Length: 79
Length: 495
Image (cartoon, rainbow over all chains, first blue to last red; front, side, top):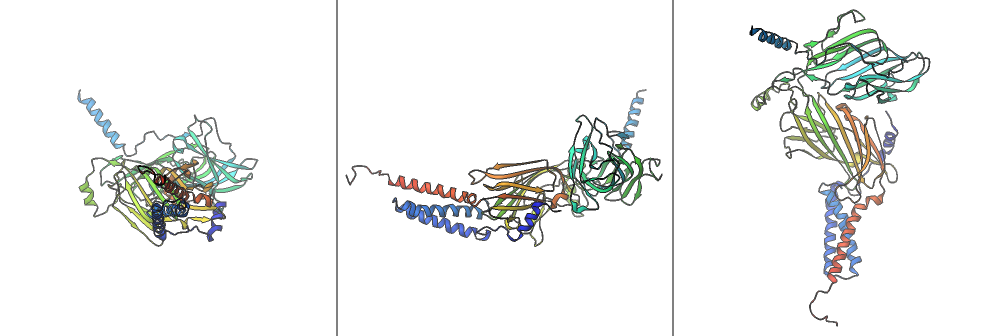
């Protein structure tokens, strides 16, 4: 029996969803990003200057944000 | 003189014992089920009707193949099938289709109740195209009757055989005149100690009723049965198998775009509706019999087939992890073999929770732009020869945070649907969740799919990392501000 949505499903057979970072590399990517964040955060904390807030703080925050998401996924809590 | 009442009570007790085999709470009386204010218009006639009742599993499955004929002067498309009110709440998986053109799919079916005082409810089948006057159409109606088998005797010993009793009408309930009909009963084996014998005068061929052929009984044929006629009969047959019944199954399917994962969790409230134990449970007797592995009324193992590629399954009950389980991954099918903490005998309950992960690419496809389509089984769960019946299934599909425009399609008959927000780890606004409820399902619905489409803009996808990023940035900014505060004692050097 065919329904409209089943036809849509069949039509989309060529484009299965794959995440940018596969399950196998989530831990590596997460760990690298978190270490980068730690490193940049550490450097920032040793040089507390206003210019370092965007220069080091922004990349550190971004690395921490994405690193945390991947690390949480890697340990089994799929957010 | 004093012994007379004693003697009479003994005789009464013995006579009740002798008649305990067919335990009727109500006498088997012919009756008219089409009572009440509403009677379906007599626009159809059942030219020929064959009902097959399959008692192989732990619930009866009925298939009615009927040739319907329009006897009205106008085209008609609404066919009614009556059920008694007590029975209609136990009817599950009701489906009707064209026997000769199954590719047309299932007809639209709805439960109708015109008169709340009436003891009769109806299933209304909408034929896809009206049937012209004098034209005929063969329709095939299938349904299961849950909780309709009762163990007789209701209490047995641990190693005893179990007998189930089923009461039904030899005349298929119909809102129309039936010219010719018969009912076939398929038992799981030939051990049928009790069954109602109907007078041969009722039979169109004046033969003994029922006709017995191995494990198949045939009631009928009966000619020209008026609408709503009922002729109750009872059969009692051996079925030493658990009557597995899930009073509630909660099933959560959670999608993670970041993790590329489809997480499933199922929470079962199982009960065995079979005969309860006459005495207390003997672990020694049970363990001794396990070497021989005889048929038993206890549910001792649950096999759950899962899709290939399934990872990290778990089996937890109220106490904690249940280690007596086995997971067998396979290329074509993975199997989760669960052994409950104790064998589940009649009237015993067991609540547990299982879950597993699966790669999302098998279930999710991208349609275009930001739209996605998800195809998941509506029901998974045990696959066992005796079958499982579900009183209620609540399925929740938890979509990613920010998913909108949710649409779905399924062939499973639903009673309720809603789209709400589900708040859990790392959420800011909560995840869109689609909740679907169905009642009276059976394990035959395992292969039914649920297809969901939704829009998930890439900006919504970045919500989670961005929230964490902003949090971290705020922390660093606070560190900078706090670190810049001069907390030294004494005069400032540059002053």
